[in-house]
Length: 449
Ligand code: PLP
Image (cartoon, helix red, strand yellow):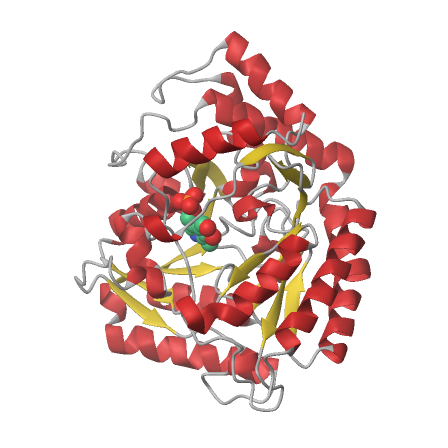
């Protein structure tokens, strides 16, 4: 029963006293004590409800406390809570088979990890083993995780203080038509020029040194950048031409976020490796992995893969993954994401683009959309500078605060607000949340020129 100020004080005191938080100056944060969650809503201890338009960290695809996932974990826990990875296990095998069944082309085997960063870590390790080469190309404006290789691949400021600087990764520009690094005047031209640029990077870095190219199929945290038609196929062709492994990072966009099992399905492209995590089981128990093509898997038929994790394919996590497949199929999740995205979200965001001087561009797919905020539509100057913090970030802070005050928990990053609710959100909740964002944008408008 809420409000519960005593419990709130206890949770806050333990947290502030002893929990060391990610990506934060510890004395400058005040984490919200959360009492409960259900579906697309969670509650603080004062009884305030928040529509979770961020799906936590864009992992909670089936919402809070989905009964099927909770039951699957409970049943698995009572049957066999854990078993080490060198043994065969029913739910681990079933989940691997179901992932292989929906993965494109000949991606038929799965190496399970604990999350997204170690999925990318191990995908790169496979690419290096298979090609005998070391360098990896990755995009500026990307996030691939927080372990050493994954943070080095990352193309955002989180890399700056963490990279070893050993020359094993080179970065390139992906397509971003609204802020084109190639001075393009259309999405098609942007895609074409981005491919020409990538080929030059391959040649100048030395194709004989490059093991892999890793790309978020749709860039997530760094902008919800949907590649123009033909771009991912062009990357596939360049990888074939130069003997490079194509790794698609689907940690954020896989498992329904854009209305497909994998975002590459929108483009009809088959990478050599797909990395996943988050939506595979909505993060109820940590799980990630690499889906592996027959060609790459065959390399390890007689040569040992030099990698492993105690909790690879943890039964509790895999049971929640199998239940996720059952819910997706029974409840038509992919279809409803496509429908809600095109019928409800896209038109509503287009209205916001028309109405608000602070909205420079809207873009996305399924239930994954970005509102890019500017000081002026004409100059496209970002509402806050790249990597803004402190006073510089105030306009975005004010926008987020306005959303929260009206009961919507938003995802914000630099000068963008992302719309990424659970895929099970009701149409009424979705419309209500979009109304809140629309009104909150009045706050951002106050900062326009
Ligand atoms: N790759 C992408 C595209 C992500 O969005 C993330 C996390 O947000 C990761 C990798 C890292 O995943 P994890 O935090 O599970 O290690």
